[in-house]
Length: 117
Length: 111
Image (tube, rainbow over all chains, first blue to last red; front, side):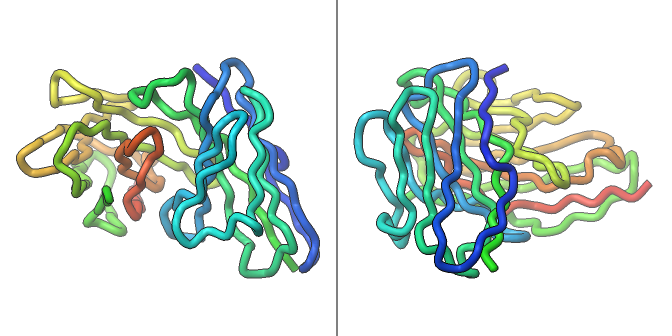
């Protein structure tokens, strides 16, 4: 099956610093990738839709200047949490859609646990 | 906007018991529906999906789900659960390519 890899799996950073999380589709091209956030014991909340070669589309309430998304190639999207604060500590998950259609299965990365101290 | 509701937040069963987890969605148009499982410490895995055709969908590990359009429902079932089914289960609906998730149901299976 299709594989999506996230790096790093976990990261601890100091408050005020920036952290970059990578999402790669290893064996397929993904025009569209999605970034989710999951708080403990809660569901996944969509943060933004990342489209290759264009600006990301952010969900309501998500600060685009704080969560920078870059989708420079068909196999890589990055999420940068800028000036991280403890409240940004969470589990961040990406998913990728093979192909162009909406009737396709999304494949998920293993997630990145971010802890801001 | 589409929303997904999972009625059971935490379900506790004994091994061999039957399972049914509820899932309802709000939008009545054409929908693609999914059930994902997240085992402790692991990433999301697809259990099954419905795009079209037979409303009774069979997935991996003995799970199945039934799409009932009139009830806006896509409940997950398994006739006999195992201890290894202990996990978090998420129902999701495809909205323009992005997935909208329910709140999740934590399933604990006692040996």
